[in-house]
Length: 246
Image 1 (cartoon, one colour):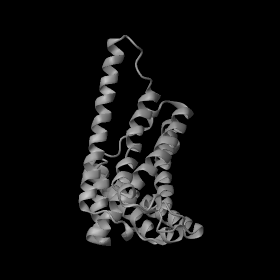
Image 2: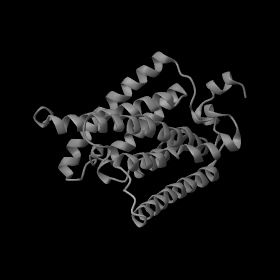
Image 3: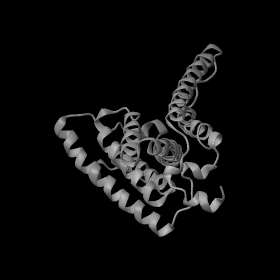
């Protein structure tokens, strides 16, 4: 398949099916478990030999390194098995003006959804999203690390796996609507916190719409990174200027 055809190929062009997605999902879970086991083993080894503990920064890089591994199963049971290169996972060029318009529109929609859900969540008394910023460290250095790992690394890995691989395969098996619903439910569930599952599910649907309209996950990655980055910047400002942030 030539580059021009790959660039035009819609998400439905993904040739992998349900079996591939199940195997890739199990492999992903296995990689995460292996990473956790290795992390625990390293901690015990460090203590046994009297070595200094891993710095907070090193632990954070390890955690996000595990998330970056989402790309590996997507490639192995996607283009690695069926061919087509990275374009098959949605990493295709897109019309700049159209992509920017969808990113801006998506950002407005997601922020609006979050505002509405926050009011509902408070009325229900459900817990909200934990503040993850402290795990990256204090001050500007911690914010910069959060913006790099949470605003760049995580969006690339998650969009490649959940939209470029999982949604594209689910779309082929169940069609656009049910493929979008199934992949978005999985995306929401892996974020664990019940109080934020509804807005994350809707956010995943927004990503799917943008992927469908642009035929590329790059706008999804940009929007995903913007949402994460705004959350970290908001948390940073709330810590420094609580009166201003209310």
